Amino acid sequence: MRKSFALFILISLSISSCSNSDDTVQPKPTEAMYFPPTTSSTWETKSLSSLGWNESAVQPLKDFLIDKNTKSFMIVVNGRIVMEDYFNGHTATDTWQWNSAGKTLVATTTGIAQQEGLLAINNKASDYLGTSWTNMPLAKENQITVRNLLTMTSGIDDSKQLIVKPNLTYVADAGTRWAYSNVFQKLTDVVADASGKPFETYFNEKLKDKIGMDGFWNFGTIFTIYNSTTRSMSRFGLLALNKGKWNNEQIINETFFNESTATSQNINPSYGYLWWLNGKTKYMIPSEQTVYPGSLIPNAPADMYAAMGASDQRIYVVPSKNMVIVRMGDASDPDNPNFAISGFDNALWEKINAVIK
Image (cartoon, one colour):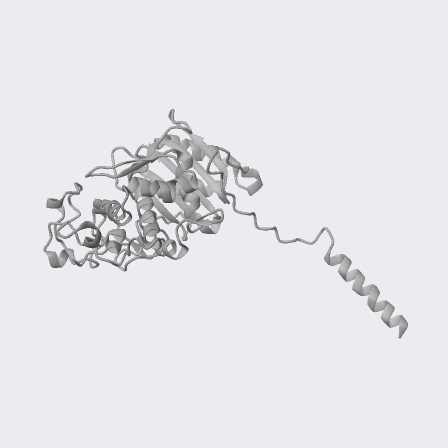
């Protein structure tokens, strides 16, 4: 009996020794998310080699970016900069316009105003803009909610880019038609009325300053455009990657952010609250009513959501890879101008995939 017990102990120790040997593959600890300081230019970096990326594919990616009139390009993983490059005379301190990628800043600021109890997105837009803010019959205008402005489903004529009352005419009942339009700009007036502050003042206090962005707004009747450095664009992408959280502060509540990056209506499932969504079964593009089958950017990860602006201003956010990618620059194809979507995205992701896979 004693011999059997001694043998059992010996076998148990042997098994324990083997299970803890250096040859056993242990799961790698998940790397903590990093947030750069809001009051300094310090930003941690991470090497491509440490991620096991294909370094031989980096130069072809850069050659492609240069050929496509890129001014800056960044890849951030777990909050750390992996690639940061500037081209064609652009520098880290130069600002550039976000174009329609800045719509996502407006959507986020609108959500912040809602969480502070200043507005409700299911309320009529006229509660904040006043009666007869459009040139539509009053009954049709009263159908338009703040949410319709966030989802491009206001029913307002999208053929005129100048956002003045005579151009804000009826095409369809709110919620029944998706059409990409500059009428989203009225959201800045909604926030201003609800907060009692100029939109830029409220935006700076509640979003920009909290995550350490630089930049400024240019407001116009045709375009409302944000301008910033590339790193500031990446900071907002990092906030988006973390579902509205920066360090230990929830800047925009997660529920609203999840709504923002989910299908907002059934007409164009590839659109949220001014965010473009990849991996859906169909999509629409600006200036058309055609519904196209398939994913928005087939070469990109299905879970990606993106801020997309004219001349190929981009913030790609990929939760499955804890990754943010930013591209700023002139149009990739000057002979084929676009408002948001372009074939550039799929070609760029082919080059990115060669690096990260």
